[in-house]
Amino acid sequence: MATDNNYVTPTLVSIVSASENASPNTKLRFYIMVTNDFSEENKVKVQKLDEKLENSVITLINMGDAFKEFEKSFWGTAMYYRLKIGSMLKDESKCIYLDSDTLVLKDLTEMFNLDIGENYVAGVLDGYRQCEEHASELEISDMSQYICSGSLVWNLNKVREDIIEEKFEQFLKKATRENKSLIFPDQDAINAVCYRKIMDMPFKYGAIVGLMYCSKYDKDPYLYKLIDRDNWEDGVKNPVVLHFVGKKPWNSHKVKFSDLWEKYYSNLEKMFM
Image (cartoon, rainbow, N blue to C red; front, side, top):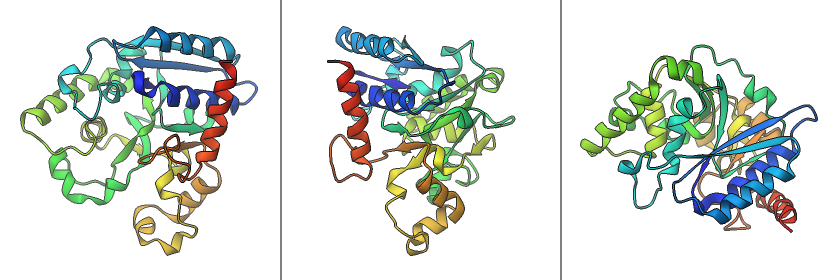
């Protein structure tokens, strides 16, 4: 995971949800990549949660000034940190990356054990897959593999072997130099650099909440052009990871599953009492 001082609470809520829904024999190692100005107060919160969760270990990784040159006014640098996972987790051959605006509702072992072969990364399809014109900005042939970067399984050995981190940086530098119109810089970097080495995960492993409002698959033409019925229905009925793309449950009770988010937030608060 990655965060700055603004997103600490959602990050910890996500961790609580993963811990509470883990199977009895599952042990979780959380690595949180944080900005250089991560406050002492927030470090204490993380440490306290680490002490409270018996099935989890939480480690903070200070990312210093990484990606400072690509910082945007409306996005901080933390969103880029997932692009450095390979070098940050040198002793891990594989990992799950989750955005802070996620909830984990089931044990993650099955997701972690996905066989992604020689691919660099596996992710859930993103709605921008239908924006074919964006392929030219990314200098790829098509958008058929375009995934959301909020819930990923990384093949860290392959990423290190093929020096993918360096290629991410080269992509971002070129995009900046040429003033490319990127949708989400980190996500676009992953999809451009890893093109043809990306695996589609079942929707349930990164169920985008915005795609779960429709009561019936056939009633939404956007859905059936984007995702097959069985994949969508399984994600709606059996979500493992919920991803709150767009509107956030801590800002509005009208967001689907906001009650679930409030439940885990309440559980987090109790631990700090």
